[in-house]
Amino acid sequence: MIEIAIMGHGVVGSGVAGIITTHKKKLFASIGEEIHIKHILDLREFPDSPLADRFTKDFEDIINDVEVRVVAEVMGGINPAYDYTKRLLKAGKSVVTSNKELVAAKGAELLQIAKENNANFLFEASVGGGIPIIRPLSQCLVANEVKEIAGILNGTTNFILTKMFDEGMDFDSALKLAQDLGFAERNPAADVEGHDACRKICILASLAFGKHVYPDNIHTEGITEITLADVKYAASMDSVIKLIGDVKLLDGGKMDIFVAPMLISKKSQLANIDNEFNGIMVRGDCTGDVVFYGKGAGSMPTASAVVADIVDCCKHLKARKYLFWADSTNDNIISYNESKTAVYLRLSTTDRETALAKVKEFFGDVQVLSIENEAENELAVITPVLSVEQITTALSELEKDGITALSNIRIGDL
Ligand code: HSE
Image (tube, rainbow, N blue to C red):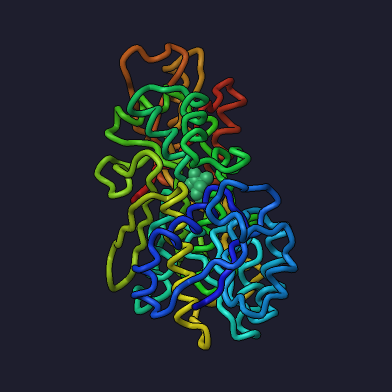
C-alpha cells in the first residue's frame, strides 16, 4: 500500500479523490500496489464525504507523516502552495500538481529542489487539463528540434469565443455559463485577460527549450476587446478568432513568445477546436505538426492527469523521472516590438476613402474586408507582415489623422 495525501478538495481535488476511489482496481493493476489516501488538507468541513475521516486542516499532519510518499497539490495559487511544495520536496516526498501558476512562477526552483532530494515534481495537469502534453513533449518528441508550439490553452475563453461565433452570444452571458460549468478560474480575469494561457505557454516553452520562461516578461492580451463585428469580419475571411499562446524558436536561438487573440483560417487544425476543449500544436523538425486535443478544464479531465502523475510517482519511488529545466534571466526572448505579424485592423473613420489612402500610405498593400450591413464609419483591413513596432508607429500616424484602431488582431499562420 502506498500512502498519499491530497492538498485541496475543490473542483480538481475532489476529482482526484473520486478517481482514486472509483478506479482502485485499474490503478492497482498499473502499480502492483494499492494507493491509499491518508490525508486530505482543506480548511472547509466535508462531514458527508465518504472520506470524512481523512480530512485535516493542518499541513503538519502531512509533512510529519513519514508514511506519506506522494502528495497531490491541487489547491491553486502561489501561497501557501509554494511553501508547502518546497517543504514536501525537501522532506523527500514527491509532489504532483495541477497548479500552473506555481509551475510557471517557481518551476525551475522546485525542479531543482526535487532533484537535490531525489524526489519527483510532476505537473501533467498544469497544461491542457486531461490532454497528455508534458510527457509527450519531454519524452516522445525529445528527438525533435521543436520549432514552434501554438495552443488554445484556456477552456473558458475558447468556450466564450465559440459561443460568440456560433450563437452570437454576448461575452458576459458566455462567461457566466463557463463559470457555472466549472471551467473558469476563481478570478475569471486570469482567463479572459490571457494570464492563465500565458502561464501555460511559459511552462511549455520552458520544457521545450530547457530554460525557465517567466510569465511577467511575456506580452499577454486577452479577449475582452473582441466584438461581434470582429466575429463577422473574421467569418467573412473564412476564419475564426482563437486565443493563442505561441512560442516560436527564431534563427539565432531566441524565442518569439506571446499570448494574443488570432484570426486563423478555418483550414487550420486549431480552428475547429471549440467550447472548453484545448488544442496544442507542436511543430517538430522530424515529426512536422503534431496536434494534441481534448478537455483542457473541468474536474475529471484535470484530475485524470493528476492521478496519472501520482501513479508515475508511485512507480518511481526510488528513482527520479528526468523532467527538468534550468533557471534563466529570459535574455533568450525577443522584445514584443520585434515580433512580426500581419494584423486585422478595424478602424473608425469619418471618410472611408481618405482613410483607405492613408492606411495604404502607412501600411502598404492592405486587403479590404467587407461584411453585410457594415458600419459606415468603419474600415476593416488586413495588413502585410510587419513588426509590432512598425504597426504601432503606423497606427499612431493614423491617429493624428483622426483614424483610430477599434480592433487590432494578429493573423495566425497555424
Ligand atoms: N480556467 C482554466 C481554463 C482551467 O478555462 O482553461 C484549466 O486550467
